[in-house]
Image (cartoon, rainbow, N blue to C red):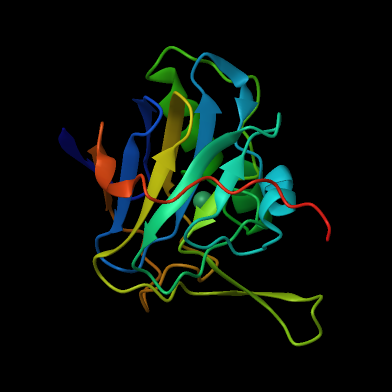
Length: 219
Ligand SMILES: [Zn+2]
């Protein structure tokens, strides 16, 4: 079964999916950065964790075949397709109200942290706190030549680029079309946030050839 959803610019949406469901996130306009979170749907205190995933994969920028794991180090999402230039980020905190205050915004600004909270409330789940360590899909955070310094740059995606994520457990998966319009992360020259599309593939065998890799251990 396939279902297609549009997430408006600056908004988020949660999907409740069974293990082996694939979620294909399409960068419709090619300019949009998308924050992503995932939770064990039977226990949301277990959630996708950037810190443990970096240990598991030994990679700062995950690629096809890499698996994200939870704060209990269980596999939760695997990248099974990626038509984009493959530039994603696991460093940067999701934007929140305080971030926009620090950027000089006086009034309320939509933000990814609140989008996560709102999206989960659609399923009746009130998170105690937003999780700021999101997987920032299509976000271009460049490690500089000194191997220490980061540089925030616009996404390098093209219209229609997509990433496909396979759920490895029954999960909530949340996407937020990042409302950031001050720091220049969106690919358009005007830095205006845009909508994204999500396609859901349930019980689809096309993406099962990629096996979950074991956690890294030293040689
Ligand atoms: Zn954001």
